[in-house]
Length: 436
Image (cartoon, rainbow, N blue to C red):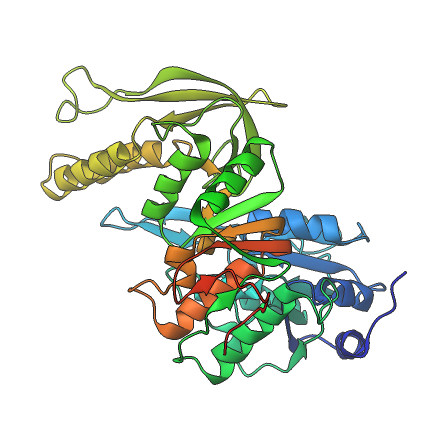
């Protein structure tokens, strides 16, 4: 059994004294030993570990040695659901804490817990934070928020946890990397820049050891080769359009369709799959998705049809349907809203079609993602798109850009790879990490 260091012992002691209503933030970079310290803090308690995404839940489930504890997504624990308002816009909701099951036979995970641990708090926005706090207060439970405050904030939401004034313990040491590791040094440089010099330009990066800088073609050849071998990797960009172009090059195809053999990740939770669930495509067939008994203003045949593909997967009998063109769903959705606003569809008729559209499966390649979508994941090698991640995208502020780069770098367990770009990164014959 590994010994706890001084920082981790501080976490253990702080959590040991927590009672109902207490809050604690445990912050530290990936590999700092947060989960190990927290797991050692709750050996004599029943902990409910909550994550904001399914990929993060899967990682945490593997890391926790004690299976007595419950690991769930926040969404599952709070009875998350989505409904439509009077304008047909999707609105999030959850089961009120006061209506949760209680007592000996309770099915509520909160009723069976002594303490709540929320992992990856950087991805927890105001909606999920409010729900967790409501349940914690209702059941009189202490809450530990664990994560990395330097990572990106939640998408289409705002940071809330770091602004609550909760007591905070920061783990500065790395249990994954030595202090001589170039990945560790780069991470520390970025953390320091985020905290102390958020508007300054970053120095040029130079190739050394685990922080590699290679010619563009070498970068692409390495990524393509490792992808084809099924390597433990992740290639990240800052935006979806760059990601789409990269998918074409890596897979060496002239289309953007999914193919047999592709390892994919569900982009949503629906009746069949969970957001972040990974599957390997076994076969692909052309198919048509049909909704019957629709009003005549939508279709003279009273059937809506959208073209796409049926996907079968290894190890499961589930069959998914994906659209041939995802933009078809957006076009149809706009049409439904227009007919509803014009009085040609009532609320139930329009909502039925929109729910049908939302139920269509959506997948993306697991090994290629935007940096935002990569949060909560950990792989051996991260290929970073220099042009959109190391070079600041025009739509990002300087501090958010640094957090974007930091998030990308800290996904790696072994190495990160950039392609050369003048003034941003280049190979250096003296093998220095950073130019002053």
